Length: 356
Ligand code: ADP
Ligand code: DP6
Ligand code: CO
Image (cartoon, rainbow, N blue to C red; front, side, top):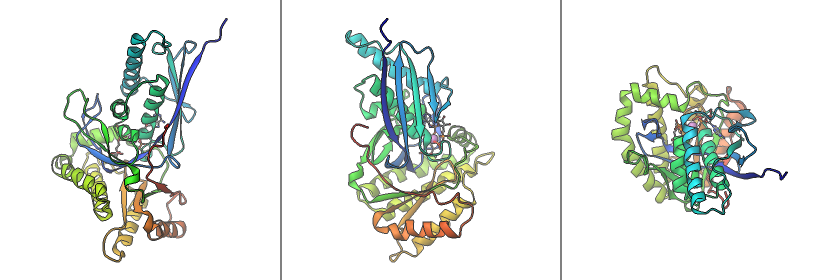
């Protein structure tokens, strides 16, 4: 008897860290956001997800393992991604009878993150981008990154931005079916290659409030959130695109820190309050503030931002490496208790390499 063939494809996906935060869904089923957002895709040299998707007639169940632990894939969001990708493959198969019939086969997905999951370092972003990308490759889909971002968005909102390198926005969109709620490139990494990010791991533990449930609680209970969505974010999106296009670091830094603060203020304003930042996070804010106030011309040279977790990401330009990363490493390495060592790394804002 002939051996049953196994079809397989692997991909890497990068993390992205938002400078204008996504927080809030207007449609929880389709994962449509209440506001647009903007992020920087980090180099895959440091933080990355590696995912292999395979399918075969011999597989009897559909599985996903993350860092060797079996995951539940029955959730509506993972299922939405799988269904859409399968549908696209099925259409290809219907139009070309010479193609192997992969769409009815069970999928086996094996994923590894090389950084803490569910700790506010965007594991769901890299994770779902890699999941969608690996299956799209396995199915040889002709889909563009924009189309894949629409699918990945349904797995985790922030994942849509990890399909692009460099500086990436996610347009909240206006369509009820979410067809225009996709990511797009604001600028390639090469447009502003001097950007660096220092990742400061205050805690690698799983957060007690997931992004999904946290933002739903904020939408339901925070009045400050309404103000953020209506009056704060739209202007900041414009300002941030302009700052990036003009390579204006002080404007980029100012908006980045303000938006992180505003997002965490809506978390505090949620009932019951959501507290992602801890004393260590606040120490990082103070260090950034001190570094910026000592800058010669009074303009910021570093910008902190925190996702839904205590870990800081500090953006700066390569020319200020000593004044920013050097100072952080000096202080955190010796004096500050509470950090789990200095796991901070200089992470270049990377583009997605060819063949990714
Ligand atoms: P984070 O701040 O790390 O993005 P979230 O609460 O948004 O935290 O999402 C964490 C969840 O994302 C995990 O519990 C897991 O379900 C999912 N996830 C993380 N990594 C992967 C991966 N490589 N493949 C599939 N899903 C993943
Ligand atoms: C604070 O994309 O993880 O990191 O769509 O429910 O999976 P789900 O949420 P997720 O939320 C990310 C929130 C954030 C800000 C951001 O990345 O824009
Ligand atoms: Co996430």
